[in-house]
Image (cartoon, rainbow, N blue to C red; front, side):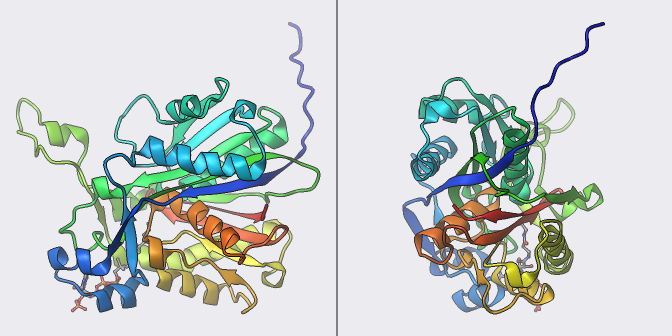
Length: 337
Ligand code: UT7
């Protein structure tokens, strides 16, 4: 039998460009409190959220993805036709199949790249970034578009006290491509399926539609979360995961310029920074105050804001971490483009 040939050797990858899309409609806390018997003060104190954005009817998952992707391609100086792969991380593309990624690729005018969706909830973007980095390094793709996008307002119950004030909508994107120097560190990732019930869709589609024996609910299945248990897991275990990502990249906290954790809750971000003993010089993403928790979109949205506001500068080292339903998590250090 002839031996397979594989001539690729490992190269380096980096983020070449970042982009975002924030829905037009700004929703202050005052608009969500009545349905959950809450207050602006409680929400700000417990989560740091002042407002969030909810997508309108035309701001679909595909539309927001394309808008964020166009910015990222522009920033990278790459044409859509140069993309070899498009990865869309999301849990709120409400069509079981086909995935949204091929439609995004087609709308961008890409030349039939590999395109698929990735379901790892709030850790989805960092999973996609790890896959993109490995593809570029191994040579199976030269340029990869990674998008994190959510329309969580579609799958959030506005009367659920534990989730209605947290979840929001938006999209962020990066283009990953070849580099002369290492630009994306090794990923530290994992899952804990035994804790699957901590954040989940309340019921599956069969429960909605019903069976010959049982009538269906007929309602959109929404998200449910055991907030306090997730809070403790995120604040402590995820701080260790983030520290490990620094370590495997050969860095210490004092080498770090920027920290971009999943924008789950401002208090989680603060607890992680304390547990990791990040020096005061590290600039920390706080996009959640204005944007809410956008699951897969939150890390690229927060990174994009920091770049645009000059808090993250070209060549800075930034530690990214996503964590959430699954449970699943992924963290890596990147060089800011
Ligand atoms: O993105 C995926 C990962 N997700 C996360 O990382 C989210 C993690 N969890 C959280 O961010 C927090 O758990 C929440 C912000 C969701 C909740 O904050 P908490 O400090 O964990 O609140 P709690 O559930 O422990 O409730 C504390 C109190 C309770 O009252 P008592 O028993 O102390 O009198 C609740 O009844 O706050 C009450 N409460 C509320 N009050 C006003 C619970 N929800 C609300 C509400 N408004 N919406």
